[in-house]
Length: 631
Image (cartoon, rainbow, N blue to C red; front, side, top):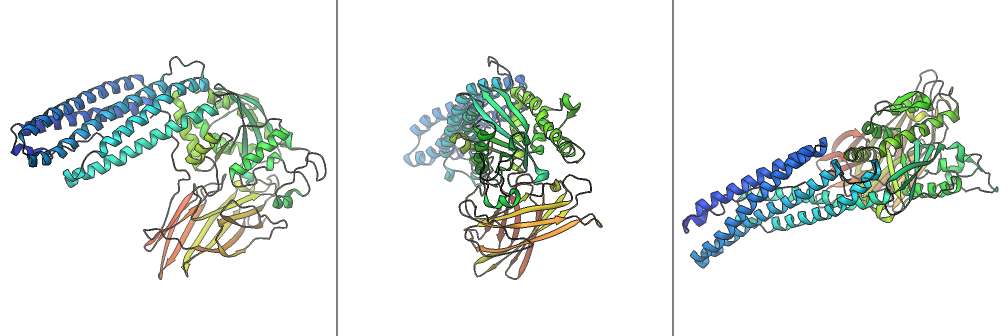
């Protein structure tokens, strides 16, 4: 966590040797103290990292010894400088003092920086020790974590204060008295300290969210949507089963769990009691039947879908949850990689992260398996999984948070909380599933919803070809989406992929045209603020002679060319939840040259266009990174 304790004092005091006896010796002593302090800090950081990773208290204890040694070195250096400042000032002319003082002050700033970093690392050691061995924290699992967080939270605030002090001391160093190499070191130190401070601030802000989620302020309930990406929907997949969790004072329990058919059916018809009118386009799939929980994730914007899920939960389950979590088998597999394999006695199987996603599909897809029994499998997994997660030792929670963070980044997990503070942090960390998370600039998101009642998405191969060019200060987009259906015979629902397709583009897009799509019978007018919707229906059938069905969808539109001060135009490309790493290829035609780049849509991407070429890079949806609980 500590960023820098470097020695900038090399030549800055040498000039004093010309006019003051003993200055060379002083310089050597101070430089030696600073170098020793830096070495001790480096050792302490390595030990803290090892201690947190291996849950080794001895490493943390040894780190404390190195921090104490570093503090002594920096204090000794500061003492030498305080003494030398007074001594030299008495012997120097005003001109000499003007020359020497900024150099001595800069050296003093570095010693103060070292002392502030020692204070910060002391807090890190305290936090790590509580996480590794939360002695005195009552309960087990999540309850013990809750108690540990209450101890850590004030320490995280002190940590931020200490790093802010270090930042102020670093800024007191006068770069004009430094050599080019020293100025470079100063810049590196500033960047590293900025990163450390951001991490500490994220931790400080995240801990109250965890307290809220774990029910520290009172009972909370959460709806867990177990979605099936083999039957893709805008929100990641059909909600095949659900779990209601309760959390109070760190005690997490399953209140209710089951297949979605047990609460969705029978669906009321229009005009009957309990009927809820669906979004217009959904009527093309369900006709005059009621909208229900299983179809609530119709919207690609997860907060919107989650609020509807809460409404249906109250209606169908009798519980108004305080939040909604949507996860697919890939996300559950990520959790299993942390917990380890879990036995499911009801099915006489052991589930593990390596095979879970495919196991779930094989259990849910074949038509030979009873529909109701299929939906019970994930419910059967839910109880022992929650039990194992809540029993994890506190030292394993950082690994769990990392795994969940990866699942969120790849859009296999989405989270929504009613609590404004908690939801604000989910948005900041990129966990919220909000459409167009950066709210501006060029943007696109292709979304498919399988309304053919098949599991075709397990076999769909999807690829994107995007061609871009500028005409009259308008960026012309040509996107071709190629869908290959390789569903084998014998699968439930058949070998067709009937999908409702949406492409979200900036609201200022013009010149819109499509190919390969059937127009809605019931037009969809829903689009998040600032965006425009291009949509329609298509169906990809497998040719029984070749075992393959292929469909190409075309989209064309133009957006204003918005180059930044570097002459770059960026497009934020958002990944649909539940999809995998679909191949993408981008061609950029500019000033008679054609540039290309290839990659995948395994996560949100940023396409950057310049006069010299095109690049595809990971796009971070959030402004911050979810912090580890052990620093």
